[in-house]
Amino acid sequence: MKLILLMAVTVDGMIARDDAHFPDWTGRADKRLFVEITKAAGVIIVGSKTFDTIGKPLPGRLMVVMTRNRRRRSRWDNLIFTDRSPAELLADLERRGYREAVLAGGATINDLFAHKHLIDEIRITVSPLIFGRGITLFNTHLDLPLKLRAVQPLEGDLVHLIYDVPKPDANTQPAS
Ligand SMILES: NC(=O)c1ccc[n+]([C@@H]2O[C@H](COP(=O)([O-])OP(=O)(O)OC[C@H]3O[C@@H](n4cnc5c(N)ncnc54)[C@H](OP(=O)(O)O)[C@@H]3O)[C@@H](O)[C@H]2O)c1
Image 1 (spheres, rainbow, N blue to C red):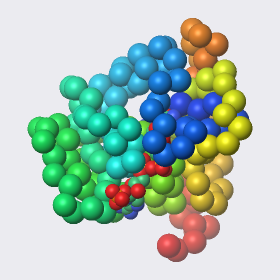
Image 2 (image 1 turned 180 degrees about the vertical axis):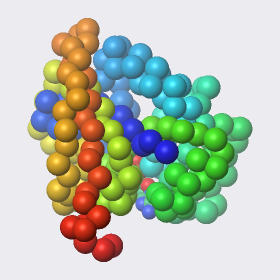
Image 3 (image 1 turned 90 degrees about the vertical axis):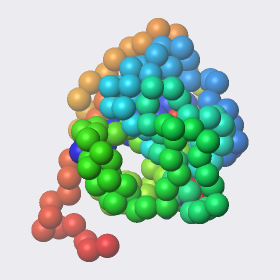
Image 4 (image 1 turned 45 degrees about the horizontal axis):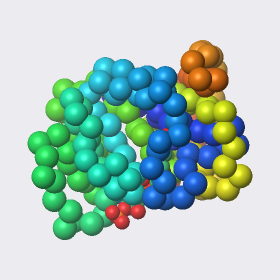
């Protein structure tokens, strides 16, 4: 299973002004790319706060919403709520036949997968904006070296960056 973290950021590294900020600032070219990459994978994983800013699943893809609230029930065939661990969730998706999944925020959920070294690729679109304050791509301490694979200018002064995330050396990785 390949896990792609796909996010839009401002030049100062923000993904939103606050946890209820609707993502209407990321630009048309980024939205097109988001549709293309998520449809190719077939599944999108998000946190419950991110889902609540959208309010419904995106068509043509399975949407997995991470929540600890077991009372949440889905009204849609292509939306599931889960409190599984990141590793269990990816194993379950693999059993369902998915070969790729897109992790699409927010910061809290990105952290969960990053700390377990489950992210294989990071794709971010940088928007020509500065929020000054807000929510960053991750919100806890991390130390992840990346390898730049591609830089793609997009219309609207956007830049799409693709990084590989090397797996840590098994001998040096601390147990967690
Ligand atoms: N720019 C972008 O590309 C982009 C992408 C995505 C999101 N965003 C923005 O990011 C903001 C939201 O980010 P966020 O970090 O505040 O929230 P988030 O990551 O979307 O969701 C956090 C929620 O996930 C649930 N959760 C936390 N730990 C969990 C665990 N171990 N297992 C299962 N569920 C768990 C909790 O919800 P419960 O209380 O339900 O348990 C928690 O409140 C929004 O403004 C959104 O628009 C931006």
